[in-house]
Length: 151
Image (cartoon, rainbow, N blue to C red; front, side):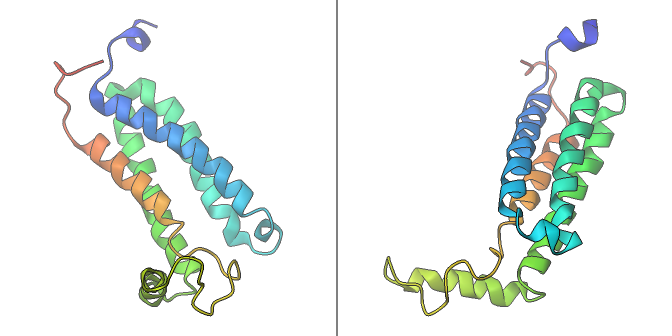
């Protein structure tokens, strides 16, 4: 129990905040995928990833100095990869074309849709939330912490 009460490094605090973010992402993805969960198995992948990150991270974080950091590095790496795969699926295998389409919205006046029906396809860059979460987690896990800067 004493190891749970010790001061935490900035890296550990950042990881804890990212795990909280994974919890919010789990709730949001469950809501956004509510219809497609019954249609295609791939829709379950981000839910499983967020749940694994949340549960695995909650177990690994208190064990930061005894291998937990390594476990978290793997979990955040998986989240990054899942985000990249999600971008691929959401853009129907055309991520660059979809990014160009998304960026074209900046040419439109507010209130216009550019001829594309709103809500007819998945948001192509939404899975980038997993990329960001994973990338920030990797930075926190792979960057040496200065112990004198602890919380």
